[in-house]
Length: 120
Image 1: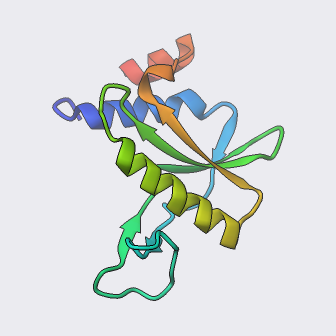
Image 2 (image 1 turned 120 degrees about the horizontal axis):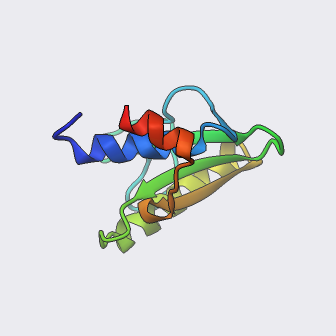
C-alpha cells in the first residue's frame, strides 16, 4: 500500500471508527437510472451503479449510516449531489432507519492507539 495514497486514507478512516461502530456486511451496490436518480433492481444498458464506502452501525445507540468519504480538496459537488439523492432514494425504499452522510477526510482523527495501528 506504500504507493497507494488512497489505500492509506481508507485504512485511517477504517481505524478511526472501529471503536464505536460495527461494519455491516459487504459493500452495498445501488443500481439507479441516471436520468431520474431513482434506484432500480432492473439493470439495463444505461443503468449506473453506486457503492457507498461503508455501512456502519453505532454500537451504543444503534443508529446506522451509509457513509461516503471524500477528500476535502476535491471539487466533486455534482457527483455528491447525485450520490446523495441516489442513497436517500435507496434508504427510503429499503431501510428507512439508515441515514446517509458524507465524511471529509480532514475531519478524521485517530486516537494514539489507532495511530499505532496505522503506523504498523
